[in-house]
Image 1 (cartoon, protein in one colour):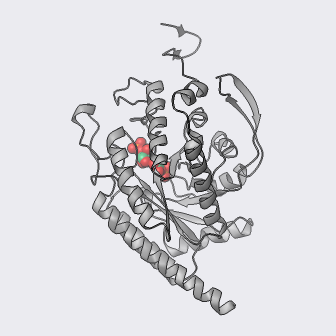
Image 2 (cartoon, protein in one colour):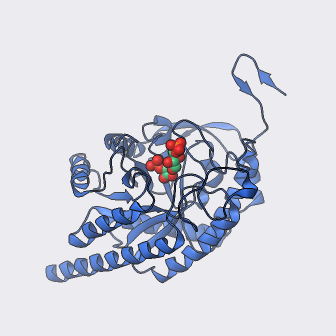
Image 3 (cartoon, protein in one colour):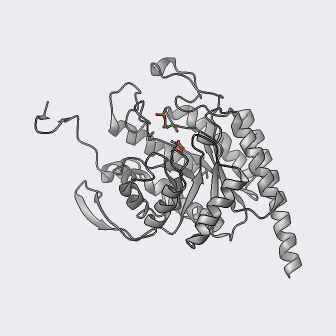
Length: 359
Ligand SMILES: O=C[C@H](O)[C@H](O)COP(=O)(O)O
Ligand SMILES: C=C(OP(=O)(O)O)C(=O)O
């Protein structure tokens, strides 16, 4: 085995190229059209042309193909039923940023045993992304390793830069290259300014070093992404309440940035108590119904079975339950979406009334 004694590294194996993976799992023209359309719809919601509520929902992380695909099939039915009022996008998170250490997600370690079969992880992720999109369900993911986006981003409609990487220039620069809206989380300590700086930075052109389809490292100029926005995810304390929304809006307004906010019902906002996502949702719904709000969407963590389980041998894991943050179960997911659809309807009615009065 190759070891470079001058560096603290040990060679494991060659990474497949994006070209190899695209050949094994090509995107059909129908799926490409669906992704393009979904991105446009999210952009329209962000620019205020589309009044529907954006709902980004799904497991905290993906560790198993079958349970996630079962969840996707159930969610896609609700997406069709609620399409007039909600734009539902499924969370499919394959990379997990850790506060200190822990399982790094399906792409890095698909066997969940520190074997780091990254090529296998990429293949599973791409196949799953194709099949979820095939259901007509757009997909959201977090981009963590700056190499990975070349393999999967053609199948993504909304991306996230997480609370642990939002201050990283490299991640902001990567966001400036991505052709879809990006949600920047506030920092884990609750700092909003790091996310606002990320929005500003990702709107600019940058130069990045990255591989091409054949694995050759190139120097690229990015064109900037005008669809960056903030995701309020709380910190040590929640930040979904009115005073935080108003304060963040004010900061955005002063910088002439769109006053558009997405509320993460989970993470610091539910203080990792999964059921509190429902309480956060009820508060946000009140906000949505009471006046024309800056909130254009919400994010929730949900899976087939509520809660979470400890990581153990893959064979003994409970089917459909998170191995990272605890999630709402399917029943509560249905209830949550019903609540959100009511809020979206009330909001749309009010908006129509205002429009009619103006006319
Ligand atoms: O979203 C998942 C987790 O909150 C994130 O990966 C951090 O996890 P950790 O604090 O358990 O490492
Ligand atoms: C890791 C996540 O969130 P955050 O960066 O807000 O902790 C997540 O959404 O899975």
